[in-house]
Length: 247
Length: 197
Image (cartoon, helix red, strand yellow):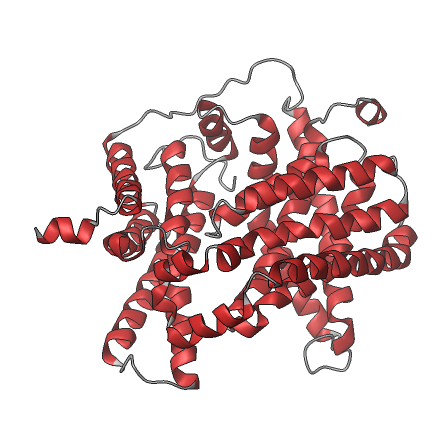
């Protein structure tokens, strides 16, 4: 998706990445398993941080780690029973950092460490049809690009006074969204041209040189996800993990 | 290019277009999502996203010439909702709204402006998928998310009751059509002038 570096092997399999990408939000943001799966809401953020560090994405890793530590300290030091606007703000910050941030970090890891080729190979192995795979890989490829474009456009528009509180505040939507759409269309045309040159529409079976074997770390992470789902399913049947451990 | 358009089957170029517009609509959704931390503002998703999303929609509609493109887009949005922790409930909603949208567009032969605007109203009901656990499974949902705090849960519970479901869908459709009209206007102003459409 981002990197075209075929020589470097990524630490985990694309399939494992996909599983993590689905599992993390389900437990951290969707709240599967409730209080029974609480232990996993502590493990999964560590997994995403670990993967970021191991893929040498130090900047994102450090930012995530510092924010996470800061919020955990704040949450345990400050009185949790207090009411009022301060509590709500703190709650919002905690919600974002413990729920959204690990998922976002995981997506950063997946996007920055997976090539489009690896991604498509992984999806093929899971028998997911092209109509899902191709748009999905475009979406992942597209997020970082569109972020850059948005930053550039925002700068330009701030210079023209089109910002909140500026002279042309009413034009915010129009003058920011439309340039983004224009760029996106252009990027889309370029992407299709590039993909068609590489034989996207070819009826032949696609071949690749990606190494997508499962290794120890893949089995470990998949087992971790499996355990999380197991705890959730058991909790549906009234068997609570917390009680089992106490016994 | 001309050879591509004559074919009725969805090709690589169409899939890439779907990916790009799905990403744009999803980025808009993500930008609006944080207002949900104040429960009273949650129903506003159904107002803001359809209005803003109308602009990329009208542009996307000019690229849609084949059966199934809108349906795929709808399903992808459902999948992305699932990936961002809204649960799988969005998928069936997206399937139904996608099929109906597709039918409306088909009635307009993928050309009629009027049909495209109305289709956006129907298409926007995909947003309703993220409300389902809040409305129909409120008790289990809040049990699972007890750490949101008493205040948040009680105010959210008072907003999301059974009667809010039709209201939210109506909001989606109404503001979706409004967004479509806005998109049409902006298309005329910018894209037609630039020769993109």
